[in-house]
Image (cartoon, rainbow, N blue to C red):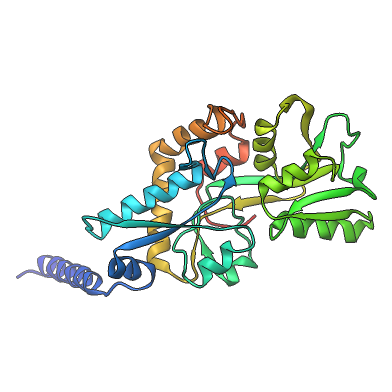
Length: 300
């Protein structure tokens, strides 16, 4: 055998050996748990509109919820499972991270910010949404800027990055804001709707979804320069490289195929079955367009 064919033969043999070794590696982490139990546990939210919520037909729906469904389909395909039971567990901003960290929940896709602190407890997928924290107020409130909140009642959902941001702003600027904590997005809006707070702070997309659900949407507006940009990702157990690779592949695949853009239109630009019918009307931002061009899993 001449030298070149011999080299080719060696390379081919090495490649086959590597493939065989990879195929022989046992499953671990979430994928092993799923295969052993025949089930996967997904986190649900009651009112994280339009990401993960119960619609008027009492069915789980939402942009992020559908991403988690695509993950289930891919797990079934990759693991060659004829059947995979999907279990659900409702979480709140306060419980979602612990329930993923202790492996009660396998995947949480809703409106959860990826940041460095949270990465100490869980891992995050490729980003699927970019937001900024702003203020929801009545149009006649006189509030246009963050500094207009001095000495006023402001509501924020407990356990969110928006809560931490508001506390930091309040302390740094000595604004004397009375911070009211809401247990979830519904209570957040109800607090400002009933006048117990003059403003609600939250990620901008959540505020626009609240306006869409209001009795009189024209009474409300979103104001204030975004204080920080944040990246939403799906949460999974920390250090689970194989499962993260699968979830990342699903999200980037949806972005490249055009399915992601179609799903965006379905939930952000068209009517959804909430309170009869509402439209969030949130066109894709330049940050989102850039994300589709360059998918990544980095916190902002």
